[in-house]
Amino acid sequence: MDYIFAEGNGREISGKDKIFGVSQLAKAAIARDGKENVINATIGALIDDEGKLIVLSSVVDVLRSLTPEEFAEYAPIAGIPEYLEILPQAAFENYRPEGYIEACATPGGTGSIRNVISNFSKPGDKVLTSNWHWSPYKIIASEIGRDVATYDMFNGSRGFNLEGFEAAIAGLLEKQDSLVVIFNAPAHNPTGYTPSNEEWDAIVEILKRQAKPGKKITFFLDIAYIDFSGDSKTARYFLPKFGNLPENILVVCGFSCSKGMTMYGMRTGAIICVTPSKEIAEEFKRVTSFSSRGSWSNCVRAGQTVLAKIYHDEALLKKVMDERAAYEKLLADRCQAFKDAAAEAGLETCPFSGGFFVTIPCENDEAVNEELFKENIFGIAIGGGVRIAISAISEEACRKVPAAIARAIKKING
Ligand SMILES: Cc1ncc(COP(=O)(O)O)c(C=O)c1O
Image (tube, rainbow, N blue to C red):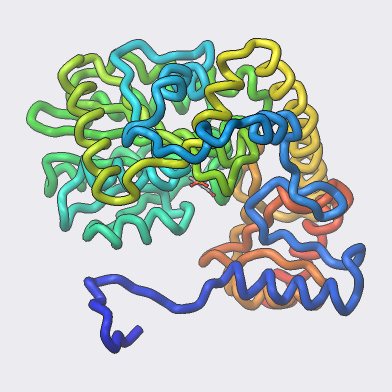
Protein backbone atom coordinates (compact mmCIF):
# COMPACT_ATOMS: atom_id res chain seq x y z
CA MET A 1 0.00 0.00 0.00
CA ASP A 2 1.15 3.56 -0.74
CA TYR A 3 0.91 5.89 2.20
CA ILE A 4 -0.31 9.46 1.77
CA PHE A 5 0.19 11.00 5.17
CA ALA A 6 0.72 8.08 7.52
CA GLU A 7 4.12 6.49 8.09
CA GLY A 8 4.41 2.98 6.72
CA ASN A 9 7.00 1.86 9.27
CA GLY A 10 7.67 -1.32 7.32
CA ARG A 11 4.11 -2.55 7.70
CA GLU A 12 2.17 -4.28 4.95
CA ILE A 13 -1.42 -3.10 5.16
CA SER A 14 -3.59 -4.59 2.44
CA GLY A 15 -6.61 -2.41 3.16
CA LYS A 16 -8.87 -5.39 2.52
CA ASP A 17 -10.40 -7.34 5.37
CA LYS A 18 -10.80 -10.80 3.89
CA ILE A 19 -13.06 -12.21 6.58
CA PHE A 20 -15.32 -9.18 6.46
CA GLY A 21 -15.48 -9.41 2.64
CA VAL A 22 -16.52 -13.09 2.63
CA SER A 23 -18.98 -12.68 5.46
CA GLN A 24 -20.64 -9.89 3.44
CA LEU A 25 -21.02 -12.38 0.58
CA ALA A 26 -22.51 -14.93 3.00
CA LYS A 27 -24.99 -12.30 4.25
CA ALA A 28 -26.01 -11.47 0.69
CA ALA A 29 -26.51 -15.20 -0.02
CA ILE A 30 -28.70 -15.51 3.11
CA ALA A 31 -30.83 -12.55 1.96
CA ARG A 32 -31.15 -14.16 -1.47
CA ASP A 33 -31.61 -17.87 -0.65
CA GLY A 34 -32.60 -18.01 3.03
CA LYS A 35 -30.39 -18.89 5.98
CA GLU A 36 -31.23 -22.60 5.85
CA ASN A 37 -29.54 -22.74 2.44
CA VAL A 38 -26.28 -21.00 3.36
CA ILE A 39 -23.28 -22.29 5.34
CA ASN A 40 -21.38 -19.35 6.80
CA ALA A 41 -18.16 -20.89 8.12
CA THR A 42 -16.26 -17.62 8.46
CA ILE A 43 -17.04 -16.62 12.04
CA GLY A 44 -14.54 -17.28 14.84
CA ALA A 45 -17.16 -17.59 17.55
CA LEU A 46 -19.46 -20.31 18.81
CA ILE A 47 -22.76 -20.05 16.96
CA ASP A 48 -25.81 -22.24 17.54
CA ASP A 49 -27.52 -24.25 14.83
CA GLU A 50 -29.92 -21.36 14.18
CA GLY A 51 -27.08 -18.94 13.49
CA LYS A 52 -27.17 -17.11 16.84
CA LEU A 53 -24.13 -16.27 18.94
CA ILE A 54 -23.93 -18.58 21.97
CA VAL A 55 -23.48 -16.59 25.19
CA LEU A 56 -23.37 -18.41 28.53
CA SER A 57 -26.48 -17.23 30.37
CA SER A 58 -24.83 -17.94 33.74
CA VAL A 59 -22.09 -15.44 32.80
CA VAL A 60 -24.65 -12.89 31.61
CA ASP A 61 -26.49 -13.17 34.96
CA VAL A 62 -23.29 -12.24 36.82
CA LEU A 63 -22.66 -9.35 34.45
CA ARG A 64 -26.20 -8.05 35.00
CA SER A 65 -25.75 -8.21 38.78
CA LEU A 66 -22.79 -5.79 38.86
CA THR A 67 -23.13 -2.51 40.74
CA PRO A 68 -22.17 0.68 38.87
CA GLU A 69 -18.90 0.86 40.83
CA GLU A 70 -18.07 -2.69 39.80
CA PHE A 71 -18.00 -1.78 36.14
CA ALA A 72 -17.57 1.98 35.90
CA GLU A 73 -14.54 2.54 38.07
CA TYR A 74 -11.03 2.34 36.62
CA ALA A 75 -9.30 -0.97 37.28
CA PRO A 76 -5.68 -0.97 38.50
CA ILE A 77 -3.21 -1.24 35.59
CA ALA A 78 -2.23 -4.85 36.39
CA GLY A 79 -5.82 -5.88 37.08
CA ILE A 80 -8.15 -5.90 40.09
CA PRO A 81 -6.76 -7.96 43.02
CA GLU A 82 -9.72 -10.39 43.07
CA TYR A 83 -9.09 -11.21 39.41
CA LEU A 84 -5.34 -11.63 39.83
CA GLU A 85 -5.99 -13.95 42.75
CA ILE A 86 -8.11 -16.41 40.76
CA LEU A 87 -6.15 -16.24 37.50
CA PRO A 88 -3.85 -19.24 38.17
CA GLN A 89 -6.93 -21.35 38.91
CA ALA A 90 -8.83 -20.07 35.86
CA ALA A 91 -5.88 -20.59 33.53
CA PHE A 92 -4.35 -23.79 34.93
CA GLU A 93 -7.07 -25.34 37.14
CA ASN A 94 -5.68 -28.50 38.78
CA TYR A 95 -2.68 -28.58 36.46
CA ARG A 96 -0.66 -25.65 37.78
CA PRO A 97 2.96 -25.79 36.60
CA GLU A 98 5.44 -25.44 39.46
CA GLY A 99 7.28 -22.18 39.77
CA TYR A 100 6.70 -18.51 40.52
CA ILE A 101 3.54 -17.30 38.87
CA GLU A 102 2.81 -13.63 38.22
CA ALA A 103 0.15 -12.08 36.02
CA CYS A 104 -1.06 -8.85 34.49
CA ALA A 105 -4.51 -8.25 33.03
CA THR A 106 -4.66 -7.67 29.27
CA PRO A 107 -7.45 -6.80 26.84
CA GLY A 108 -8.21 -10.37 25.72
CA GLY A 109 -5.56 -12.84 24.67
CA THR A 110 -4.55 -10.35 21.99
CA GLY A 111 -3.17 -7.98 24.62
CA SER A 112 -1.04 -10.76 26.07
CA ILE A 113 0.49 -11.40 22.65
CA ARG A 114 1.41 -7.76 22.24
CA ASN A 115 2.90 -7.63 25.73
CA VAL A 116 4.95 -10.79 25.38
CA ILE A 117 6.46 -9.65 22.08
CA SER A 118 7.18 -6.12 23.25
CA ASN A 119 8.83 -7.19 26.51
CA PHE A 120 10.76 -10.32 25.58
CA SER A 121 12.08 -9.51 22.09
CA LYS A 122 13.98 -6.54 20.69
CA PRO A 123 13.05 -4.26 17.78
CA GLY A 124 14.20 -5.98 14.59
CA ASP A 125 14.01 -9.47 16.15
CA LYS A 126 12.06 -12.32 14.71
CA VAL A 127 9.51 -14.18 16.80
CA LEU A 128 8.82 -17.78 15.87
CA THR A 129 5.53 -19.50 15.15
CA SER A 130 4.26 -22.28 12.86
CA ASN A 131 3.52 -21.76 9.15
CA TRP A 132 -0.19 -22.23 9.89
CA HIS A 133 -0.96 -19.49 12.38
CA TRP A 134 -3.50 -16.89 13.45
CA SER A 135 -2.70 -13.96 11.14
CA PRO A 136 -2.82 -11.21 13.83
CA TYR A 137 0.46 -12.59 15.25
CA LYS A 138 2.22 -10.99 12.29
CA ILE A 139 0.22 -7.78 12.54
CA ILE A 140 1.00 -7.42 16.24
CA ALA A 141 4.71 -8.12 15.65
CA SER A 142 4.96 -5.67 12.75
CA GLU A 143 3.15 -2.95 14.71
CA ILE A 144 6.01 -2.96 17.21
CA GLY A 145 8.88 -3.39 14.78
CA ARG A 146 9.32 -7.15 14.94
CA ASP A 147 8.81 -9.83 12.32
CA VAL A 148 7.53 -13.40 12.34
CA ALA A 149 9.58 -16.42 11.24
CA THR A 150 7.87 -19.75 10.66
CA TYR A 151 8.57 -23.49 10.48
CA ASP A 152 6.41 -26.13 8.80
CA MET A 153 3.99 -27.29 11.47
CA PHE A 154 3.42 -30.88 10.32
CA ASN A 155 5.75 -33.72 9.36
CA GLY A 156 4.96 -36.34 6.72
CA SER A 157 3.16 -38.56 9.21
CA ARG A 158 0.51 -36.06 10.29
CA GLY A 159 2.36 -35.27 13.49
CA PHE A 160 4.00 -32.14 14.84
CA ASN A 161 7.23 -31.35 12.98
CA LEU A 162 9.58 -31.55 15.95
CA GLU A 163 12.72 -31.47 13.77
CA GLY A 164 11.61 -28.35 11.91
CA PHE A 165 10.63 -26.69 15.19
CA GLU A 166 14.02 -27.37 16.75
CA ALA A 167 15.96 -26.32 13.63
CA ALA A 168 14.06 -23.02 13.48
CA ILE A 169 14.78 -22.26 17.14
CA ALA A 170 18.45 -23.15 16.71
CA GLY A 171 18.73 -21.04 13.55
CA LEU A 172 17.19 -17.94 15.12
CA LEU A 173 19.24 -18.28 18.31
CA GLU A 174 22.39 -18.18 16.21
CA LYS A 175 21.42 -14.63 15.23
CA GLN A 176 19.54 -13.47 18.36
CA ASP A 177 20.36 -14.02 22.00
CA SER A 178 16.69 -14.19 22.93
CA LEU A 179 13.70 -15.68 21.18
CA VAL A 180 9.94 -15.52 21.68
CA VAL A 181 8.23 -18.70 20.51
CA ILE A 182 4.47 -18.40 20.02
CA PHE A 183 2.77 -21.75 20.40
CA ASN A 184 -0.99 -21.98 20.06
CA ALA A 185 -2.39 -25.20 21.56
CA PRO A 186 -4.47 -27.11 22.35
CA ALA A 187 -6.91 -26.83 19.42
CA HIS A 188 -4.69 -24.62 17.34
CA ASN A 189 -6.17 -21.89 15.13
CA PRO A 190 -6.52 -22.47 12.17
CA THR A 191 -5.89 -26.23 12.11
CA GLY A 192 -7.54 -27.61 15.27
CA TYR A 193 -4.33 -29.51 16.09
CA THR A 194 -3.38 -30.61 19.60
CA PRO A 195 0.06 -32.13 20.26
CA SER A 196 0.13 -35.65 21.74
CA ASN A 197 1.53 -36.32 25.21
CA GLU A 198 4.81 -37.53 23.65
CA GLU A 199 4.98 -34.44 21.44
CA TRP A 200 4.54 -32.16 24.46
CA ASP A 201 7.42 -33.99 26.17
CA ALA A 202 9.58 -33.62 23.09
CA ILE A 203 8.73 -29.90 22.82
CA VAL A 204 9.89 -29.35 26.40
CA GLU A 205 13.10 -31.29 25.70
CA ILE A 206 13.77 -29.15 22.62
CA LEU A 207 13.34 -25.97 24.64
CA LYS A 208 15.77 -27.27 27.25
CA ARG A 209 18.30 -28.34 24.62
CA GLN A 210 18.17 -25.06 22.74
CA ALA A 211 18.21 -22.74 25.75
CA LYS A 212 22.00 -22.82 25.76
CA PRO A 213 24.00 -20.74 28.26
CA GLY A 214 23.77 -17.06 27.33
CA LYS A 215 20.53 -17.59 25.36
CA LYS A 216 16.96 -16.93 26.50
CA ILE A 217 13.76 -18.51 25.25
CA THR A 218 10.32 -17.16 26.05
CA PHE A 219 7.78 -19.88 25.32
CA PHE A 220 4.40 -18.24 24.86
CA LEU A 221 1.57 -20.70 25.19
CA ASP A 222 -1.55 -19.29 23.58
CA ILE A 223 -4.38 -21.27 25.21
CA ALA A 224 -7.25 -19.28 23.68
CA TYR A 225 -9.15 -22.47 22.70
CA ILE A 226 -8.25 -24.72 25.65
CA ASP A 227 -11.83 -24.96 26.90
CA PHE A 228 -13.08 -26.19 23.54
CA SER A 229 -10.32 -28.66 22.75
CA GLY A 230 -12.12 -31.77 23.97
CA ASP A 231 -12.90 -32.32 27.64
CA SER A 232 -12.15 -29.02 29.38
CA LYS A 233 -11.69 -30.87 32.70
CA THR A 234 -8.60 -32.71 31.44
CA ALA A 235 -7.44 -30.48 28.57
CA ARG A 236 -4.81 -28.85 30.82
CA TYR A 237 -3.08 -32.13 31.72
CA PHE A 238 0.13 -31.15 29.88
CA LEU A 239 0.69 -27.85 31.72
CA PRO A 240 2.78 -29.26 34.61
CA LYS A 241 5.42 -30.22 32.03
CA PHE A 242 6.12 -26.47 31.79
CA GLY A 243 6.95 -26.12 35.47
CA ASN A 244 10.43 -25.79 36.91
CA LEU A 245 12.26 -25.39 33.63
CA PRO A 246 15.72 -23.79 33.63
CA GLU A 247 15.87 -20.08 34.44
CA ASN A 248 16.63 -19.09 30.86
CA ILE A 249 13.28 -20.47 29.70
CA LEU A 250 10.40 -18.20 30.60
CA VAL A 251 7.00 -19.81 30.16
CA VAL A 252 4.29 -17.27 29.47
CA CYS A 253 0.63 -18.14 29.12
CA GLY A 254 -1.82 -16.08 27.09
CA PHE A 255 -5.16 -16.38 28.87
CA SER A 256 -8.43 -15.25 27.34
CA CYS A 257 -12.05 -15.12 28.51
CA SER A 258 -13.24 -14.61 24.94
CA LYS A 259 -14.02 -18.23 24.03
CA GLY A 260 -14.10 -20.09 27.34
CA MET A 261 -16.46 -17.59 28.98
CA THR A 262 -18.08 -16.35 25.72
CA MET A 263 -16.98 -12.83 26.67
CA TYR A 264 -15.42 -11.99 23.29
CA GLY A 265 -16.33 -8.31 23.34
CA MET A 266 -15.55 -7.80 27.03
CA ARG A 267 -11.82 -7.78 26.22
CA THR A 268 -10.74 -9.71 29.28
CA GLY A 269 -7.54 -11.74 29.39
CA ALA A 270 -4.17 -11.93 31.06
CA ILE A 271 -0.51 -12.58 30.55
CA ILE A 272 0.79 -15.07 33.11
CA CYS A 273 4.36 -16.22 33.67
CA VAL A 274 5.83 -19.37 35.19
CA THR A 275 9.48 -19.27 36.16
CA PRO A 276 11.77 -20.87 38.75
CA SER A 277 13.09 -17.39 39.63
CA LYS A 278 11.29 -15.04 42.02
CA GLU A 279 13.21 -12.07 40.61
CA ILE A 280 12.25 -12.88 37.02
CA ALA A 281 8.60 -13.22 38.06
CA GLU A 282 8.68 -9.84 39.79
CA GLU A 283 10.37 -8.25 36.80
CA PHE A 284 7.70 -9.84 34.57
CA LYS A 285 4.99 -8.14 36.56
CA ARG A 286 6.78 -4.79 36.42
CA VAL A 287 7.51 -4.78 32.69
CA THR A 288 4.14 -6.09 31.56
CA SER A 289 2.34 -3.52 33.75
CA PHE A 290 4.54 -0.77 32.34
CA SER A 291 3.70 -1.82 28.76
CA SER A 292 0.01 -1.92 29.61
CA ARG A 293 0.25 1.62 30.94
CA GLY A 294 1.91 2.68 27.69
CA SER A 295 -0.66 1.06 25.41
CA TRP A 296 -4.22 0.51 26.70
CA SER A 297 -3.68 1.62 30.31
CA ASN A 298 -6.05 -0.51 32.40
CA CYS A 299 -8.44 -3.21 31.19
CA VAL A 300 -12.22 -3.60 31.37
CA ARG A 301 -13.19 -3.82 35.03
CA ALA A 302 -16.52 -5.53 34.38
CA GLY A 303 -14.95 -8.58 32.71
CA GLN A 304 -12.42 -9.01 35.51
CA THR A 305 -15.12 -8.62 38.17
CA VAL A 306 -17.35 -11.19 36.47
CA LEU A 307 -14.56 -13.78 36.30
CA ALA A 308 -13.50 -13.10 39.89
CA LYS A 309 -17.08 -13.50 41.14
CA ILE A 310 -17.49 -16.78 39.27
CA TYR A 311 -14.27 -18.30 40.59
CA HIS A 312 -14.85 -17.06 44.14
CA ASP A 313 -18.18 -18.87 44.33
CA GLU A 314 -18.03 -22.66 43.97
CA ALA A 315 -21.72 -23.11 43.19
CA LEU A 316 -21.63 -20.39 40.56
CA LEU A 317 -18.48 -21.84 39.00
CA LYS A 318 -20.17 -25.22 38.76
CA LYS A 319 -23.20 -23.61 37.10
CA VAL A 320 -21.01 -21.92 34.47
CA MET A 321 -18.98 -25.09 33.83
CA ASP A 322 -22.11 -27.22 33.54
CA GLU A 323 -23.65 -24.79 31.08
CA ARG A 324 -20.46 -24.68 29.04
CA ALA A 325 -20.12 -28.48 29.02
CA ALA A 326 -23.23 -28.72 26.81
CA TYR A 327 -21.60 -26.41 24.26
CA GLU A 328 -18.30 -28.25 24.47
CA LYS A 329 -20.24 -31.34 23.45
CA LEU A 330 -22.01 -29.49 20.65
CA LEU A 331 -18.62 -28.51 19.21
CA ALA A 332 -17.08 -31.95 19.76
CA ASP A 333 -20.01 -33.52 17.86
CA ARG A 334 -19.52 -31.09 14.97
CA CYS A 335 -15.82 -31.90 14.96
CA GLN A 336 -16.48 -35.66 14.81
CA ALA A 337 -19.09 -35.21 12.06
CA PHE A 338 -16.60 -33.22 9.98
CA LYS A 339 -13.91 -35.83 10.55
CA ASP A 340 -16.17 -38.72 9.52
CA ALA A 341 -17.45 -36.88 6.46
CA ALA A 342 -13.90 -35.92 5.41
CA ALA A 343 -12.81 -39.57 5.66
CA GLU A 344 -15.83 -40.63 3.60
CA ALA A 345 -15.13 -37.99 0.95
CA GLY A 346 -11.41 -38.84 0.86
CA LEU A 347 -10.64 -35.25 1.80
CA GLU A 348 -7.25 -34.61 3.35
CA THR A 349 -7.40 -32.08 6.15
CA CYS A 350 -4.70 -30.79 8.47
CA PRO A 351 -4.69 -33.15 11.48
CA PHE A 352 -7.27 -31.88 13.97
CA SER A 353 -8.95 -32.91 17.19
CA GLY A 354 -11.02 -29.97 18.37
CA GLY A 355 -11.39 -26.23 18.58
CA PHE A 356 -13.19 -23.72 16.43
CA PHE A 357 -11.49 -24.36 13.09
CA VAL A 358 -10.47 -27.00 10.60
CA THR A 359 -8.12 -26.31 7.70
CA ILE A 360 -8.02 -28.08 4.37
CA PRO A 361 -4.65 -27.61 2.72
CA CYS A 362 -4.90 -27.10 -1.04
CA GLU A 363 -3.32 -25.33 -3.96
CA ASN A 364 -5.16 -22.32 -5.40
CA ASP A 365 -7.00 -21.85 -2.13
CA GLU A 366 -8.64 -18.59 -3.28
CA ALA A 367 -10.11 -20.27 -6.37
CA VAL A 368 -11.21 -23.34 -4.39
CA ASN A 369 -12.90 -21.10 -1.83
CA GLU A 370 -14.66 -19.13 -4.56
CA GLU A 371 -15.84 -22.39 -6.11
CA LEU A 372 -17.46 -23.20 -2.75
CA PHE A 373 -19.35 -19.88 -2.85
CA LYS A 374 -21.32 -21.36 -5.75
CA GLU A 375 -22.65 -23.99 -3.32
CA ASN A 376 -23.38 -21.28 -0.73
CA ILE A 377 -20.49 -22.46 1.46
CA PHE A 378 -18.38 -19.62 2.81
CA GLY A 379 -14.99 -20.34 4.36
CA ILE A 380 -11.78 -18.31 4.36
CA ALA A 381 -8.84 -18.82 1.99
CA ILE A 382 -5.83 -18.43 4.27
CA GLY A 383 -2.95 -18.96 1.88
CA GLY A 384 -2.26 -22.63 1.24
CA GLY A 385 -5.65 -23.79 2.43
CA VAL A 386 -9.28 -23.10 3.25
CA ARG A 387 -10.31 -22.54 6.86
CA ILE A 388 -13.74 -23.73 7.96
CA ALA A 389 -15.14 -22.46 11.27
CA ILE A 390 -16.92 -25.53 12.63
CA SER A 391 -17.75 -23.34 15.63
CA ALA A 392 -20.17 -21.46 13.38
CA ILE A 393 -21.94 -24.22 11.44
CA SER A 394 -24.33 -27.00 12.40
CA GLU A 395 -23.43 -30.68 12.70
CA GLU A 396 -25.51 -31.27 9.59
CA ALA A 397 -23.42 -28.70 7.71
CA CYS A 398 -20.24 -30.38 9.02
CA ARG A 399 -21.44 -33.56 7.32
CA LYS A 400 -22.00 -31.75 4.01
CA VAL A 401 -18.98 -29.46 3.68
CA PRO A 402 -16.14 -32.01 3.25
CA ALA A 403 -17.62 -33.57 0.11
CA ALA A 404 -18.24 -30.09 -1.33
CA ILE A 405 -14.62 -29.11 -0.69
CA ALA A 406 -13.38 -32.34 -2.25
CA ARG A 407 -15.47 -31.51 -5.35
CA ALA A 408 -14.21 -27.93 -5.47
CA ILE A 409 -10.57 -29.01 -5.19
CA LYS A 410 -11.07 -31.57 -7.96
CA LYS A 411 -12.69 -28.99 -10.20
CA ILE A 412 -10.01 -26.32 -9.65
CA ASN A 413 -6.87 -28.44 -9.30
CA GLY A 414 -7.87 -31.50 -11.32
C1 LIG B 1 -5.06 -18.16 18.19
C2 LIG B 1 -5.71 -17.05 18.92
N1 LIG B 1 -5.07 -16.50 19.94
C3 LIG B 1 -5.59 -15.50 20.64
C4 LIG B 1 -6.83 -15.01 20.34
C5 LIG B 1 -7.26 -13.88 21.21
O1 LIG B 1 -8.51 -13.53 21.25
P1 LIG B 1 -9.04 -12.38 22.23
O2 LIG B 1 -8.11 -11.23 22.11
O3 LIG B 1 -10.38 -12.12 21.74
O4 LIG B 1 -9.00 -12.97 23.61
C6 LIG B 1 -7.56 -15.55 19.28
C7 LIG B 1 -8.89 -15.04 18.89
O5 LIG B 1 -9.45 -15.32 17.90
C8 LIG B 1 -6.98 -16.61 18.55
O6 LIG B 1 -7.61 -17.16 17.52
